[in-house]
Amino acid sequence: MRIDTPVAIVGAGPAGLLLSHLLHLEGIESVVIEIRSRDYVEHRVRAGVLEQGTVDVLDECGAAERMHREGLVHRGIELRFDGRRHRIDFPGLTGGRSIVVYGQQEVVKDLIRLRLAAGGRILFEADDVSVHDLESSAPRVRFLKGGEEIELACRIVAGCDGFHGVCREAIPAGVLSFYERVYPFAWLGILAQAPPPSEELIYACHERGFALYSMRSPAISRLYLQVAPDEETVNWPDARIWRELNRRLGDGARLDEGPILEKGVTGMRSFIAEPMQFGKLFLAGDAAHIVPPTGAKGLNIAVADVRVLSRAIAEYFASGTETLLKAYSQTCLKRVWRAERFSWWMTAMLHRFPEHDGFQHRLQRSELDYVVSSRAASASLAENYVGLPFDT
Ligand code: FAD
Ligand code: PHB
Image 1 (cartoon, rainbow, N blue to C red):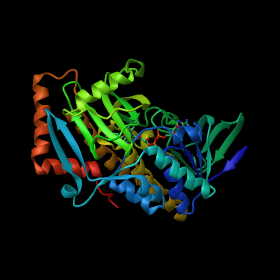
Image 2 (tube, rainbow, N blue to C red):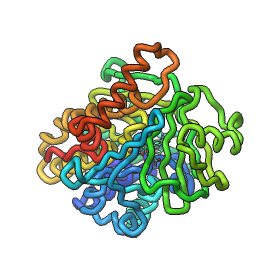
Image 3 (tube, rainbow, N blue to C red):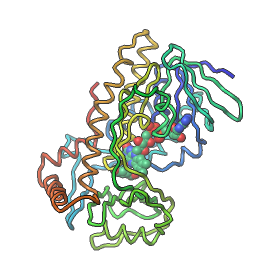
């Protein structure tokens, strides 16, 4: 079976779904193909911090109604180290900007509902997805759906299929340059039915390793622990997790413990593929770049990418002009590298590195001390955390 569509979007994560919605608002239809089921993508627990700019994009495109009802506006974070607690006040340091804590899977649910209500096509549980003729003006995407072979005939392919997707891999060897750092640790993340010990996120740098306290609602906590890179969840029974969280995050008071609803280990890497384009294939989000989660930037740069891409595609279909499409990669990479730098810096400042000697360890402490004692340094952290304004 063949389906004609102006834009084929591979991947129904935040990048693919938001792109499809933004294009729809520009009068451009698309088909989204996703290897997983709807239930799976709607329940995959991942990011939780939305920058002010991401909130603004969701607002402008009418996808923020539930987020405003259920999301938690946060005006700061706490840094904890050496028994000290320091608050970074976002609005005070950034001229009034803040963030919203709202689960990524909730954003995904909202976007799927919006797309389907508008008659948008999202084909879940597609197998053997492949992309073809990317250098021609008529690229194609092929896949199997319920055993049937389907071909999407399109003019633009958006590769929004995450880090392990097929789109980046389909670009011939030698075209892309890769920039990468793999960190010598991972994060063990849990979702727990336990009330928050604090109204704001706590980033803790502890001699036993980094810990992060976040949340999803006044009754659900999201907590992370730095663990070995090859760690497995079977080694972390619930009691061990709570013991370790109490050690690293506790400042005398015990955390409220509750049933652990979800457990997972995430490797930490920085990765950028340049350029984010090959012929009529445009990569967006994790398909093109990965950040370690310490800066809470991954979802936010995925949103920034598709904001740029939707405008470029709209220009292309409206006038046949490729100016914005040609500039796509360069426009995005500027913001991507800023997020990469910030995420790398937060990761380096807050984690325990096995190879660190006394010199590096003391530099790390001195950096934290500077960040919390200098208004300029606090402001630098705050303006990056809430997100730099969009250029245009
Ligand atoms: P994805 O969400 O990965 O979506 C890609 C989609 O493509 C998936 O649905 C996948 O199933 C599908 N797919 C894959 N292969 C194929 C194929 N061959 N064909 C069709 N479909 C395919 N970011 C933040 O901004 N803030 C945070 O607080 C934050 N915390 C995080 C915490 C953790 C533990 C993790 C793991 C990540 C975190 N991130 C955070 C990063 C954020 O989750 C990602 O950057 C974000 O999901 C990127 O969205 P995306 O749409 O580009 O990719
Ligand atoms: C989350 O709530 O999942 C979260 C928050 C901040 C981060 C990473 C993840 O830096």
